[in-house]
Each structure stands twice: as structure tokens, then as C-alpha cells.
Length: 175
Image (cartoon, rainbow, N blue to C red; front, side, top):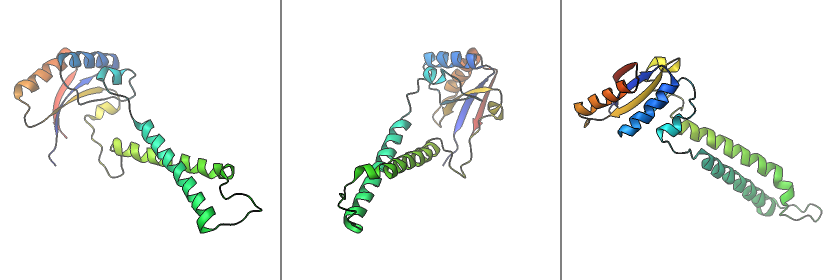
């Protein structure tokens, strides 16, 4: 797989970054990503990102846990090891609530944890892509992805927009 190239601008304040993102989007340029040393409220809206669907995945994992628990308990009590407990019915849902709840929580939590790791490329052994070491302590970065078809005039346009929006440094890097 070929390495990707990016152009990024560094900002020294989160308010300037949010204003810069709005200006860049108004210019019609596509921002690849923004890197910040801490969460910046309002940046997602400024970048035009849609809501995450992680909660939907959590519901699906939880429903799978519930269905697994109920199916397994029903199979055990009716087919695998049917025991007559003093005339009580085989399908005794109130007695199954604790284990059903526990499996629902287990499936949802493990499933969401693994989904989070996958979506954010944080799996063990995966090397993190750090644009600039200073974005982990005090600077903010706005990045633009370049491909082999990106012209020099487009690169120059990105550089001009970054400079006009308040970037203190502008760099080009291959990741």
C-alpha cells in the first residue's frame, strides 16, 4: 500500500481552529481531519461530521446477547437437560432475568469495545499516525489529503487558504 501525503496547518488556539475550519469549508475545500490535544466542543459541527452510529451497534450487540441467553436457556431446560422442578414450567422467564441481563451487558460492552478499537484503528500492534508531535501537547492541526492527481495549483490554493485562516505553520508530509 502506498503512503499517503498530506498538507497540514498548525494552529495555536482552538477558537482560531474552529473559525479556520468554517472558512476552509466555505471555500469548498475538503478537510481530511483535525487533530487536537484535547476535545474541542463544536469542532464536529464546524467540520460537518455526522453523528456516530456506535449506539446502534451497542443495541445490536445487546439484542444479540439477550437472544443468545434466552435461546440457550430454553434449549437447556427443554431439550438438553429437562428436569421437572416440582411441576414448574420449563419456560420460566422470571428465573432467567439475571443471566439474560448479564449476557446482554457482556455482549454489548465487549462488542462496543471491539467496534471502537476497529473504527479508530487502535488495535494492538497498529502504529499510530501522528501528524506532528506537538498536536499531542499544545497545537491543533487541520489536514488535507493529497493523491497522485493533486495538482501543484491545488496544493498552493490549500496553502494560501491555511495561511489566510490563521495557521502559524504549514507543512507537507508523507505518512
